[in-house]
Image (cartoon, rainbow, N blue to C red; front, side, top):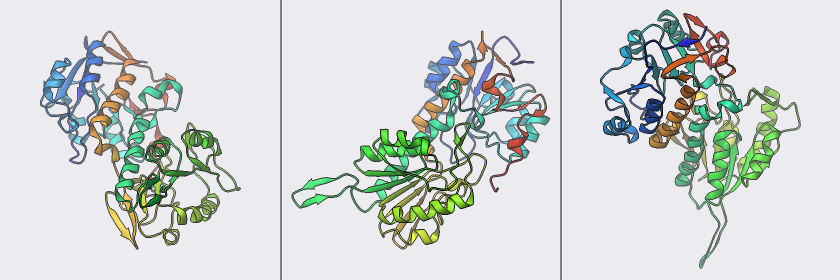
Length: 383
């Protein structure tokens, strides 16, 4: 049976995010205007967009209604991170929560959603199909992370990125090694090339070679052992034998690198450890490692979330939550992802979500008191 909001118009809430280190917001004035045009009543909590550069006045001009606390008055709540316990407790039964809900192993959240009989859509679980591309929040945020990672590295590096010909002589370009050619990795390739670096890319999937080379990068082929492919658009978990061979191959690359950008991640699992303590010994003093996977255990040994560590002259940057450092565009893009998803199912201001729709089948986490993705909820990132 399709889900639908009650009342004549769907009330959509854009709340203040409660995490003190989360400046993003789940909707911009632009996406507010889009949803109002679809017949929705958009409620925006006062100050919700302030940290992202959006004023309350901007939202009002776009047609929103300002509220102090809208969780008890909405049909749909849009959020960046998973809402806390108190907000879900006051939300009306039958409501829908949409956001980056961190579903892997999050049994406490699922239990509360089921008890309150709230439906929830977790954007991490959207299928990698063409129809879902405008809603792909992981990609929109990873693009920002890949871009900002290179800027962090360039600022921390002890030399120029581009080749420069000066009266004092020629400066050779920096050599950048990128681990992983997903969305963040490819954006890192493009950004490092724009800055003039020579870029090498290592990935376990030979199929990404063409994408890397189209951006001006040089592809480092995987070891000639069992090679993992893709599943649903993501890299499969690699075997330990493969990872060991890859680490051996990377040692020579690391010895030549000025900058290493680590982006390799597998949804629902700890990030593969690609750079060991022993491998760091081969890097020259002054080199920089930026680890985008640090929150999932890290691709590089010794990285710490949110910290820069000087290890024998090598700077290890634990680059957690980089999209939060560009909150205006991160929120703008994220809001468009959410609006694109809602627009698929809004009819005359009423939200109707069919659980059998291929777009929703994977990302519908809970509905009508039941969890639809037990496989995800029972998976822990500690695996």
